[in-house]
Image 1 (tube, rainbow, N blue to C red):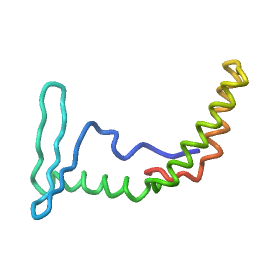
Image 2 (image 1 turned 180 degrees about the vertical axis):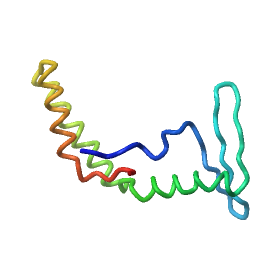
Image 3 (image 1 turned 30 degrees about the vertical axis):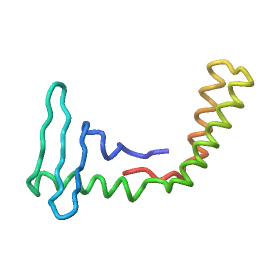
Length: 104
């Protein structure tokens, strides 16, 4: 399943969007932080959040996926698999959920 990189792996950031004001971005760094408030600086973060929103599962669908994966995990644990069995099972699970939308 080729899914590409996650759209928000570039570091810790928070998009702050307030009614009646321009959005801000807070970038968290080790020992410091930075606020971005210029439109050209904020725009890539707004696009990234929009991309993530467009590919995210609906809450009910996400809950179904988590419950299904938990059931699959429990069945593997109960069976007491060897390491190779667990790896094969993980590969099968990944293949079963190819319809899960991801950022490209």
